[in-house]
Length: 126
Image (tube, rainbow, N blue to C red; front, side, top):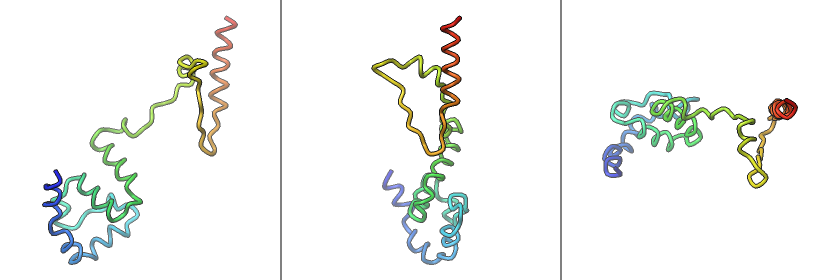
């Protein structure tokens, strides 16, 4: 595979120099992962190879680029986290395997905890 990638990018340096104004547009773009590549690279490169080029030009845009790549190739379900079911997790927990919450700023798990507490309280009373 590395031989194929090297062959694909064989004249890339010359092309970058001769069409630097076109590559500059991609570099300056707010969404370089969506910007069209200059010809012939737009037709020659696979999506993965385009990711390599964007990684070299704008490493700060790799995360949205990879997210789009995974969504296009595998589907949206691979980029969205599954919904968290606190009641199911509580049932799976025990004193040797407790639930541990790592919260981000602004997260408030109290509403979910109250719902689960009421649910289990109702089960005890009924």
